[in-house]
Amino acid sequence: MSSIVYREMTCAAIHDLSGLGKCSLTVALPVLSACGVETSVMPTAVLSTHTGGFEGFTYRDLTEDLLPVARHWQGLGCGFQALYTGFLGSAEQTGLVGEIFDMFPQAMPMVDPVMGDGGRLYRTMTPAMVEGMKGLCARARLVTPNLTEAAALLDEAYQEGPLSRERLEELLCRLCGLGPEMAVLTGVRCEGGLGAVCMEKGGRPTFCMLEELPGAYHGTGDLFASTLLGGLLNGMNLEEACWLAVRFTHQVIESTRKYSKDFRFGPKFEMHLPQLAVEVEAFRQRDAGPDSRGRAKDTPSRCGGGGVS
Ligand code: PXL
Image 1 (cartoon, protein in one colour):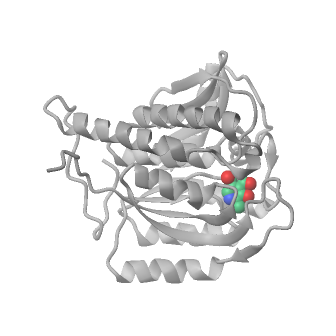
Image 2 (cartoon, rainbow, N blue to C red):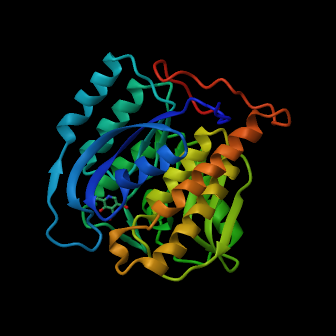
């Protein structure tokens, strides 16, 4: 008999599907599955490659399909514990995703406002898109911008850093001021380390920092956000899930540096998935054991929905 601790965990991931160059759905799906999360996918667009550094990519827009897909799922009586959005193709899509949040009110809306990196917005981003993303973040319970995206959301100039603890806390407070209960800033340099800082509204920030590995790695924002959500759905608190995501992203970047000839093709995460699965399973074992911290064990069923406990 298997000794695995079963916990029902469900989410719907609303991102593009880029065929080559791992990011968005091709990262979210394997990572969430490794975390034991049953993940439904709603592709917002299908591309031959992502848009970061490849020329001549194909782009099939799926805006018209988003609401019909959501209505079909709703008609089937399905609910999700989380709705997780990342790269979106247009300002119109940000509005539609907001409507989809309303259709599944039991689900925790998590918005990774994927818009840019290194102080620059991606080439498909428009001012209307930034405004749309601000509106979507206002409806989210958790947002996970990097510093470029946070600057765009807060109408501030981009600062590469290193940033002081006080400045990072101020940014997190302002992000929570947009609406969400939890905010995580990613790709942050502070006091000689690189990592993420997380905060719950009205709380104090937690700094999850490790030694910086030089370079810029495509798709690691998606890797971080997907692992963070995997941790949360497994019952971790924000701080625990943020550390899980920082450690996992760091390990994957080490392998990407070592084995990848071209970082545009995305993070080399596959060899690390078994270890991630072991880590979250170990957490579930502890959480279900007699010394658990009294967390709610009864996660709501897939059809019926529910929030993150
Ligand atoms: O990883 C972010 C991302 C996701 N999806 C697409 C992208 C990018 C970043 O460039 O182009 C299509």
